[in-house]
Length: 498
Image (tube, rainbow, N blue to C red; front, side, top):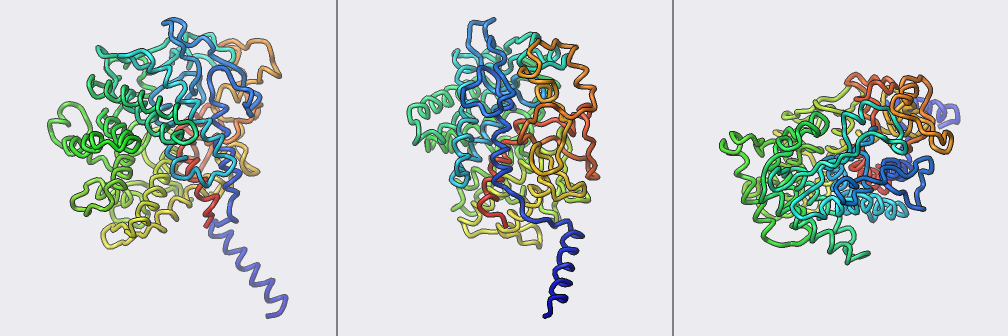
């Protein structure tokens, strides 16, 4: 073949790649580093000397003073300045899971991922330090959402809200137990004393959640709703917490708890009591843990036959609810290929569900198994392929050719819905910026002055359109529970890009 023919062939291939929307492989390692760095931008409390996101400063240093309990630390969940324990705990559980599954692939970023987990677990040890009480929230959400204010300047009430024996909150308590148990596995070798402390507290908090059953909607509804109201009941969190405790302890008690209690969730009695049915196999996020429980437990019981292992069967059904070619698909895809589900900031769905696909694919590979969706046979490689398509879309393989991760790529969101990012930093503007004085920055068309590197926003609409506007928070607000499962995905594709 002559040079002109070779050039023509190469041009044809390049043209087809462009038409098909396929781009060169992304720098997953760079995206991984940035996805972890994001958590430093969400830190509350006294920042360590190792803090890399330098424009953030100390904040909320007196949390818990009203009740005589040190509640300094933890994470702000999104673009506001409230510490919501329910989504924070879920983010911690999944971040720990990401490291447990893929930490060996993270290289130097492993240290930072471990630090990100510990920033949360140190706080949860404080939040569960008083027997019979679990701190569910710090900060008045209505006062906070009425202001556009840097966390360093907060002057809104930092009221602590707790669940207790009399006013239970099984979902938030069990999720914290899951976070502590999962994290205990991370530190088992490097810091066995700390690991044992986490596991001991996880056991205590789970016992509290199980013994004093009830939803925090009933006890703290005026403050947790509509922000992080629990819509799916608390039984999924109890099973989720017990599953992680089994992984951390290998005690048959917890596995028996899961296998004995899961079938009861599908009964009419449970439904009548206001709990969701466990057949909700296709959901996974800060509110609903069903698919996560099924994937985790199916791995523990992978040697059992599918017909005697409902977790394995439900995990397969979860996969079939996602695959584009499946006859039982229950999600939709945008014209550009982004997965969509109803409810909240959409980007949490393609990321969290893709994380489960990836993890389950590894479990299936180890068991030399495949998934059957009607007449469709899906090997583990197909699950990985679907997950990678979602990650690549987020990083720039989409109709707008933009990355939805701040600081990654040449084109990314500039006006994210995030108070600290959108207001000049303390370094640039040392004087306090009060509640309403920050409104001018919220309304400004200027790009955010502080780069919240690694933040993944809520994303485009179902037609692949994105408005780079702070006011459209559903599209422009980042959250910890969007980033947490992405860490695991990026670590895997960093080492296995194809």
